Image 1 (tube, helix red, strand yellow):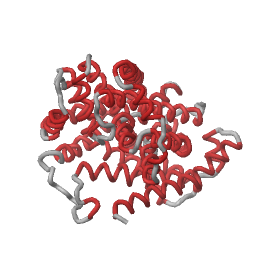
Image 2: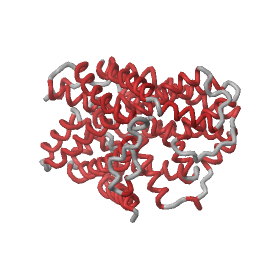
Image 3: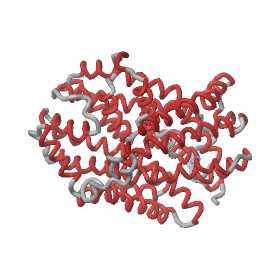
Image 4: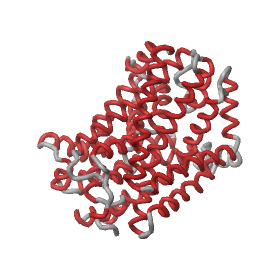
Length: 460
């Protein structure tokens, strides 16, 4: 096992915050948030989403970072250390294993979607979207999905870049990539919002996002907003435990957590402000679902002045966001392999990345060669899901909520008040609030989400 003092650290608290923001800001903000908000009525959903970020997202992320800095190792070895210190049962090791295996599994299909963004950068730059109708856009996206060669090529490029930067270590790899990419991501995002203000129906976009119609608010939508908050913030994924292990003792966890959650939420809202005015100006519907980015927006880009530049910038933005999150997906397992196997970091990054790359073949082929494969057709609510949809369902609706629940229970009920108070450095009242949320509010609400998802799936 690696000794604590040999653990590499971020060069500064600012570098850590950039990396953590990068791990949180990803396809959940720029791809998933706009279509989920669009499907669920806009303003009311957005308001509840923001409330969940404040009420649960910030306390849970603070708990993850505190556990990571307390253990100072990979998620698995951090949990082994914390279990020993707190004299807890071995069953809590599940948090560590989920926190390295789930991100690796997620990367294997996440990279397929990121590959779509890379492909569309080229398509947009070539002017392919000019004159697009809804039908031709759908056909274009369908042609991409039907080509295993294109999907696997971009998947390989994407995973290869992720492996390259993770292999270089925390400062030379993760920091270098994030310091260049994250500011560029926000610059492009702000530029696209500026374009939407001038050329899009910005007033309608603002109204859709920020004028809540509470008559559209239902209990399932409230739960969906909570799930989106977790997905967007990467709560329960494992990246924050891993990144927290590299964080110096003099960094303020509460301030850091608020900045990360604030930046992540801002990215999601800016994505909405960039996308919906363009959608409305083009006379398109905001509730188009997952195809909003790859089928609906190309129609708008093809019809607008300067659409080649705007479309290219948009898909570069999408690729940057995906990449910054992927670094946080690969790092947990690389950190653990480096500790356990004693081999060089580049070889461990190549081994872990190779697993994600090989797994990605399955999900690339699930759109074409294996598009009719339904592994769980004997289970009614999973019968129509292919390989890609099944992995996405289990990661987003099972593994992330379950791990978030376990993290809340461990931080709130197993770790001593002295341990968590020492890491968080909060005042008495703030700490009492955090502890109450972690012990009672978080387990109950996350438990409700898990039970509701199961009931909905079973049709109960």
